[in-house]
Length: 231
Image (cartoon, rainbow, N blue to C red):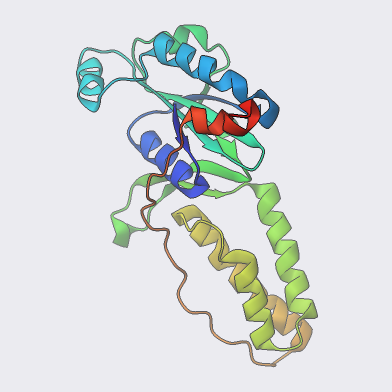
């Protein structure tokens, strides 16, 4: 298992694997009290699905018609979330994982921590076509809409409204899908501000940031379990 300690890096890696054709998945989680079981689970997965192989071996397997599997995890506050991602092709993953889902199917989208992985069409000036990206799930997006409405209503000045909205939204990882949603939420702020305050000025928002390439920062299973095992 490649175990991340940074949620943005984890999401970025999952997105990249989806782009590379790893469209089948199963996922799960370990609570902190069960971290002691992670090592055995990881060994089992690695052995069953040939996870721990080199990029060159993966290329050779793909050319021979075999499927490849990646095994990723991310450590949150008191939980470890894991995911198996697989390509098409001959691999025991497709025989044993009866609950596998397909990322390309709307009803089987991968949702993690309030985000969902989706394929969105790119603007023509960006090359067109579609690409994988993360965005807020509908329920979480509605929560932010409500908070933006409240921000516009309660702020005393336009400067305060904009700064409060920035604190609310700009911590989000600005994947393309999320960036589009955040842009819409700032537009909503402006409309709601006019509704509650008329022509009172609201400062113009500077351009939204893009998520940068995240540094891969991983931790070992031994370190994960250190506190639990009291070593």
